[in-house]
Image 1 (tube, rainbow, N blue to C red):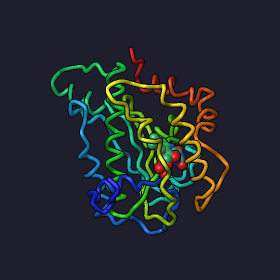
Image 2 (tube, rainbow, N blue to C red):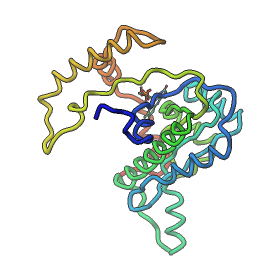
Image 3 (cartoon, helix red, strand yellow):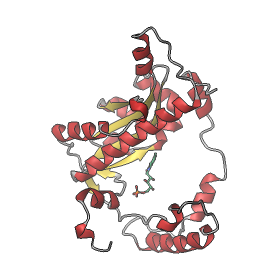
Image 4 (cartoon, protein in one colour):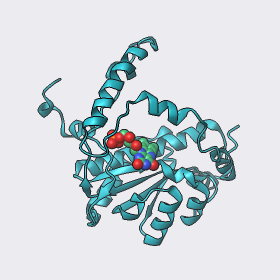
Length: 250
Ligand SMILES: Cc1cc2nc3c(=O)[nH]c(=O)nc-3n(C[C@H](O)[C@H](O)[C@H](O)COP(=O)(O)O)c2cc1C
């Protein structure tokens, strides 16, 4: 479909998504903030376990500490910083209500407790964008998950996955081109043979985008920085941290 006007407003908001990393000093009005969180809660949940918690960090000192630990200054200045956590603690308590000790410690439950929060967070950012606000996920919280957990008092069975900054955009980048649809959409059967040609095309497209965008121009494509990013193991402390929260994932 070429006529974007005829798409739903929701689709237009989703297709126009960009991460926003500069915010005005004004806060998001509280009634909008609450509706945004309610929209987040509307996300589907695997077996309706709702295995997530969101820590809304409003204390500026805590925001500053988390910003330093995550190595991300936007956390300090955004209107609202949300820490998204996988959470099996509430389910443990639900089980206890019935005299049942839940088997939280297995890979399947751990995956559920990472998928559920991601779906909620994406609802949250989309709802915020639909009201004209902007945001940026912060995977940097996994640079120091232990100290960050301590700052917000996360118990065992609760672990931080990523942050989300929200605010009123002071600056908005151009929409980043995504992989060609054929590269991510396979019909009936997975097909890796098509990748090389499609990646060449995408490298061209990304390199034009990086050269022509209005700020932070650079001479780069997509495949090379991805290869550099993934050539070494990253955040190897995560296994020990997750174990410290009670997950051995047998
Ligand atoms: C789970 C997750 C973690 C991310 N962590 C960071 C981060 O720590 N810092 C940052 O500046 N952007 C972060 N991002 C934003 C991505 O860099 C961004 O979504 C990607 O480059 C695509 O750009 P766009 O969102 O503007 O389309 C993260 C995104 C996701 C989904």
